[in-house]
Length: 222
Image (cartoon, rainbow, N blue to C red; front, top):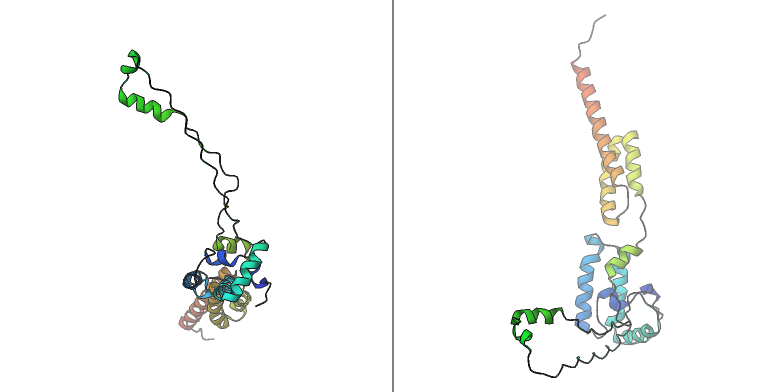
């Protein structure tokens, strides 16, 4: 792997695996296994995504390479790398309570629960929001969906549709293979493969019906 970490494609290795910067070796390995179960090609994931996860694991599991990456990460602008959180602002001092005095007659007439209600409605000073609060943590799966490249039509699905019209028996072989490939790669063309199978079925029924009707029709002697 190159020392400039180009194989990560500008992504943060920690964010890819959903880890904190102080994660140990066991946490790194568990996170890589969990993410691989979600994005491996055998479960309908993407090979490109799994490749990024593997590069992130190789980078963080090697202590020497991880040290170089941490130094590189401090100066690079990476996807999903949150800035260091700033210190929270000092809390506002509580409002000064008035000096106690002798209760008036109208104060004694108030019910205790009514005083509680007034206290609940009183305006409370809240600390100003921190403009340097940490941003939203990056979601690797959402980033993968937003940056995934569109996949075109599967070539075998197109060939199956043509064979269904020209040579139907061959389409019975190519159309199921095309459906399996589309399911694995996520390419388009599932409707073409299914249409090819339907055409083969219709042509088979039509030919069979014509043969049966022709066989049962009496031959007119001349």
